[in-house]
Length: 345
Image (cartoon, rainbow, N blue to C red; front, side, top):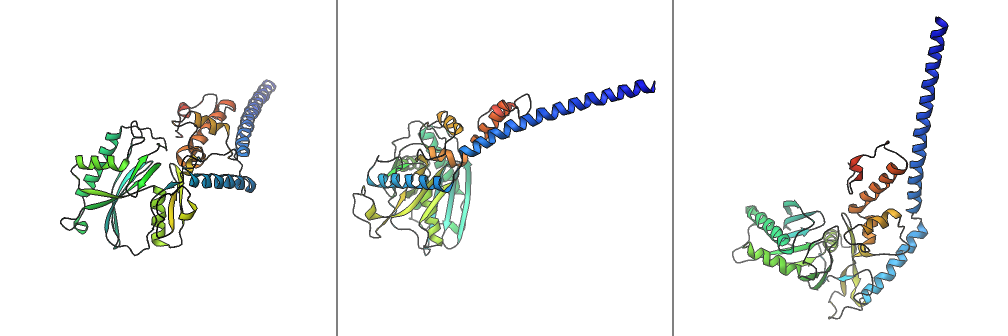
């Protein structure tokens, strides 16, 4: 009896050992396959110094071409009409509206030392022109209605608004400009080619809001101005958020496409719109190509799609999907949420 029991125990242990070894081998195989996918992705994304220099040189060429003529480069190199930046000695009361890739934010700024943010609202990425600006104007009206006694204007004085618009605009003055295209996943019909300041002004009038747009700037230009306000040595600004862009101070003499009188400062802030940069030197993977092909603007904003917050998570998502499919990394069944684009939880 003892022998029989002993044999049964030994056989049971042997079977269990075989199962454990098989499970470990299977798990190990999955891990090996998964690590191959990750290693391959890492290698294709490599950016050694020599590669970065190639990208920088290619971007420099595109910058010069964009400054020389309209349409001469993938980089728009847009003239901002900002030829003087803050000194840090500015005083007064101003309003600001930031319409960006994620939120609309209203600011009320008293340069004697107080800044109040009264409204932050998530934006829908698919609207119509009138609906978009009516929404923004309504929020501005609510913003003004909430201002306290410290922010009262003298009778007869019109409120002035800085409009920070985080999308490519061809400006014709400091306070006007037509929308060139949408970025950051926005797709709003009937807006391209429209003057965004004129449309906002109409919406404000429909709200009965007495407020004049005194400046239209890109968010990179606004960031540069903010940096210069606190540090006179600041000459460039970079946005790394839902999208990506840069602005910098250029010598007016170095802008061949500038046809007006040279500004007294001798300088002009340039909005690069570098999100649209593209080069054979960029380390693009099959995941980047697939994401671009399925985006709202295929073939455009390639640099932005490689480095900005809106797209980096989706690149990781696509790598995980491949690991789930080819390496069975999450088990025999692929998690349903993993099949949904732009979701990682």
